[in-house]
Amino acid sequence: MSAQLLPPERRAVLAPMYEGFPGLHGMLHSILEGVLGVASVDDADRPRVARLALDDFHCIAGDPEAPGAAKVLGEVPQGDHVAIPEAWRARLLSLCDARPYDRFAFFAPERWYRGDLVRLRGGLPEGFRLARVTVEDVAPYRGLAESLVANFKSNEDFLERGVGFAITEEASGRVVAGCASYAISSHSLEFEIQTHPEYQRRGLALVTGAAMIEYCLDHGLEACWDAAHEGSALLAERLGFVGRRPYVAYSIGEERPGPPG
Image (cartoon, rainbow, N blue to C red):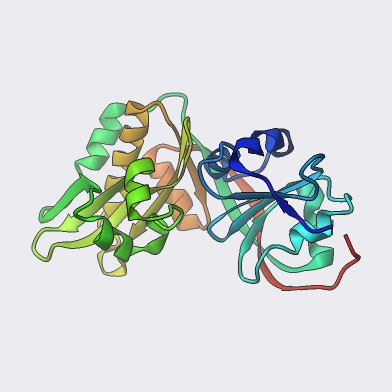
């Protein structure tokens, strides 16, 4: 039996499978709530295995020994990334060419200090402008990095359901840094930050990140951060995120032949 897609309104039933999942919590909230991404299962009526996917990342959970586990794993395209509970490790490695790497999950502190956020946002260098992304600048904002907007159906969908902050160089009018809702739900927002290579190490990422945290505070959203490398982890800590928790994710190569599922 092939994996089956669950419609957005039925995804909440999968939430127990993802309790205690190692990372990407804001992304999981969004998919389970039916806002973004896709959810597929081994059996739509009695799911034992699930895959929640957004962009090129797949979070797989449930029973690794279920007959449909191989089918769900087989849906992951080459070059994409997978996060799993530790109980899935042996199953994943037996079926896929999976190369491990370290990621770091972070949590919002018990209390954000507005003064610290104002100080970080005030570090914007002279000659640059920070503003929330609007219809006038969403195209160049997307041009900075596709990942800032690509999880939404269109630029218009991003403006309606997502949120972004951009830093523009005033002299050139060029968007050079941005922070976006990589994923969003009714109660959380997963961060995505990008800076043009020519403008890095000027504190621009800190400025956009602080602006987004303030937005989350103003709108009752949990700020969520998941780091794919040490540089991202250090940025999270400078912004005030806490509880660095390492976990292993995997980049998927060619699928290895396995038992039918």
